Amino acid sequence: MGHLLLYDVGYGSFKRLEELLKVLKAKGVEVLVDLRAFPRSRIKGFNREELEEELKRNGVKYLWLGDKLGGFRREGYEKYVQSNGFREGMEILLSVARDKVVCLMCLERDRRFCHRRFIVEALKGLGVEVRDLARDQ
Image 1 (cartoon, rainbow, N blue to C red):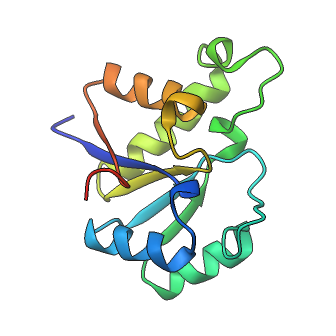
Image 2 (spheres, rainbow, N blue to C red):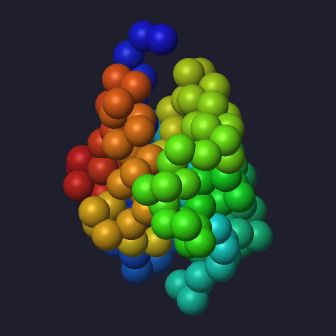
Image 3 (cartoon, rainbow, N blue to C red):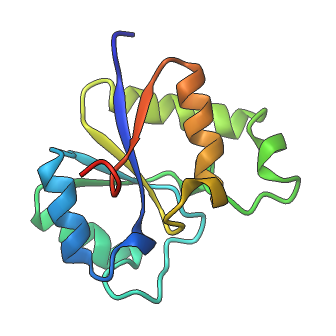
């Protein structure tokens, strides 16, 4: 599979969408993968429709995988990681990441307190490098 590098970010680290866009551009991110089960936000610019539009305007593709990789699983996320839905989501994610620079996005700024950590662990288990977009400046 060669060396794959992905970024991940919790947009709670940013006060405004412009700040996130600046960092995405600086890292050459081509696809933002939204991992939120419910892609809505109280922070202006982070609702799915607004976000998708603004990313497109800035040359970044938006991909929502919240149906397959989003949090809030009845049986808990650790158990969900064993499911077909999770595997399908990971396959989609990896197929995109093979040709494009990808950043995974959720709200929680620290992945240790987010379901994103399980996705990152699974990726690392496959030999994929994942860097925190906000910290890796």
